[in-house]
Amino acid sequence: MLARLYNIDTALVTPRTVARRFREGEGEAFYKLIEDNRYRISDVLPQTIETVPDKDAGEAYIRHKIADWLRQEEFCFGIWENKNALLVGFVRIYNIDWEVPAADTTFFIDREFEGKGIMTEVVQMMMRYAFGQLQIEKIRLRTATDNYATQRLARKCGFRREGDLRSEIRRASGELVDVMLFGYTKTEYDKV
Image 1: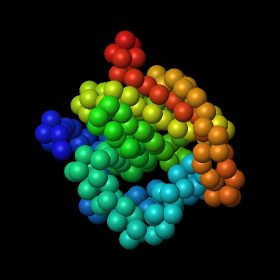
Image 2: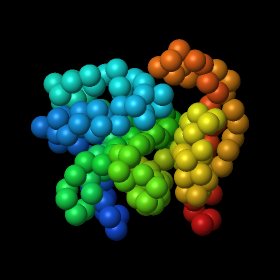
Image 3: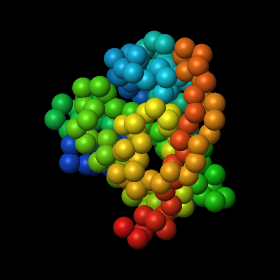
């Protein structure tokens, strides 16, 4: 465990959201978010869909993410809308290799909040957090080759395409699809 991470921020504010570490008792809200978006994210986040089939599993998932945070293995934030304190998405920094240090990120936002620039605000804030407070040197992002919205967002936030991974993920339909690999380094971020 890294002592420098004991007092990192657990809540980050953008103009329209608060991204914060999940708390016990928020599994039902997370389940509702997943359920409301199940058809949209089943191909993108199949493991999350499988892991959260009901409210109790939603609570177990949230408690697991809290434990991962405390063990410094993963940092998972719920994205809460400022106006109504409604859970509208989540973002994760995970697969952390503290030797480099490097990590992966993934995220999604509720269909009602998509296309409004909210996720751009959150991802830009998360990059500041990852490179600043966590002192990560590189963040990776993987997205299906036909997920144009995530590709645009990645480029807008500073990520650069690094390559393709063939037949990397299996969709709910059973189809294997290619993935684009994006990366963003602290050196690149510091130049902006």
